[in-house]
Amino acid sequence: MTDRHATKRLLKTLVISIILLFLLGYTTYEIQKVMFGPRIEVTSPVNGSLISNSFTEISGVAKNIKDISMNDRKIFIDEQGNFKEHILLSYGYNAITIKATDKFGRNTEKMVEVIYK
Image 1 (cartoon, one colour):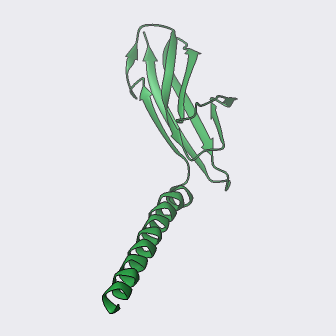
Image 2 (image 1 turned 135 degrees about the vertical axis):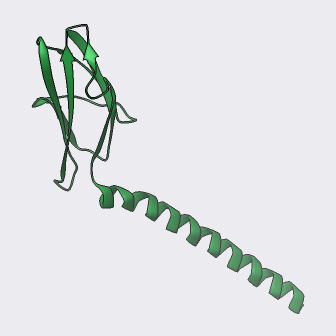
């Protein structure tokens, strides 16, 4: 009978441990949003690139954001945080500024500089 109680106690301890590990992992995953704030990664075009088409596409990924804008014009993201916007470049040097704000009011900014030739 004691072997049966020991097995029950071990099983109960194992189940509680698994639940606690899951909760700890989920908490760590969620807290990274609070710790790191908004993040922007521009995938296209590469900063400093030479572009031959005046109507070009700016794309990238934004994480942990509430609002995002490009050159002070609101843009939208999909469920994964991807954004894709078209912009008309002027001849020569162009600076494209992407700004994002998270739900805590923290801001981040990413500037992409391109040359239209």
